[in-house]
Structure formats: structure tokens, C-alpha cells
Image: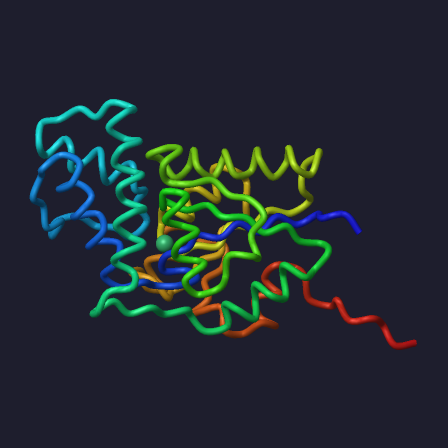
Length: 236
Ligand SMILES: [Mg+2]
């Protein structure tokens, strides 16, 4: 059976949370690369992209980053995250039902799974590998490729269509913030929101989610939302 359903996932707040490590790595990377001491207290990470956050911090320091600055920062960020993720005081959470759902979908011949994340690519894989979820995703687009999540989603869709050699019958983007919902809209995907991150159900409905789930813990409910229920052979 050909893959006809593309399911794109955000990472932080949707699949997992690595509390404290991202912020710590970010702060160290900007200090290492540019000597800026910034505790990032006024920076909101949820729904943002690493490149957009970097641009904002650079602007606070009156600096306009070059492509070389961006590369340097992204490389250092991954280096720092690899260290920070193993340090004391960092808690890792995989949200309820996520391993089971990814196992089920990645084993479903109708589905192709991808990532649409604000993380720099190497950071995305570090986070996923840390909790052994990395093998479910065959492609993605990442936070070092564009500062705007909508463009990241477009890139992921293009890659998926190139890989499949055709358009998908159904597209879904699962995320935890209004920015994920906007990105889903921009690529014509059904926007599925989960209330495991920084936004509550009402915020996500108000932002235009097609469906809001408290979490991904109810496999049957998620499969229904994805239109993948009824995969059991019929008994005559
Ligand atoms: Mg998120």
C-alpha cells in the first residue's frame, strides 16, 4: 500500500519536554559565540524557532546576524544541548501515549511521519534520541532552515512530496501552540493541537485548531482524528 497520509509532528510540548536544557544550551551558546550574557528571562520559547529566537536576541544586542553567525550559533547550540541534556536538574518527559502512537503510525503502511520543528536539526535528533523516539521519523524540516515556522512546514511538505513522488491524500500537523496551527493552515493540513505544552485547550481552539486533544494518550481517539480507525480486517 502506498503512503497516502502525511503526519507531521512538532517536538517540544507535543511529544516530549526536556525542561531546562534548551534554555541552558541557548544561553551558553550565545555567550560562547558572541559573549552576550543573557538569561533569556523575557524570551518565550513555546512555538518559536531557534533561528527566530537567535535573531531577536541579536537584535537586543544591536547585531544583525550574518549567515555565518547563524551557522556558528546553531552548531554551538547543538554542542551545548548535548552536554546540558545529561546534567543535573534537567527533567525529561515523554508525554502519555507518544511511544505507542509513533510505533503504531510508523508501522502503518498508509502513513509517513515527519517533523516540523523550531529546533535546529541536530538538536531535534538529540532530543528524540535521548528518549528513543528518533527512528519513527523519515524526514523533517528544522529551525536552522528558516526563522518562520510556516516556511519550515512548507519545506517539510515539499520534502515529503518529493520523496513520495506525488501529493498526499491527507495531511496532518500535530503541535501544541498557535504557531503550529498557523503552520498547518499554511500547508493545507488539518491542525491537531495537544494541550500538553504551554497552551490550554481554549487557547488552541481560539487559534483555530481543527481538533484539540488533552494529550496523545488515547490511541483510538488519535487514530479516529487521523481517519485511520477501522484498520481491523472485517469479519464476514
Ligand atoms: Mg511545541
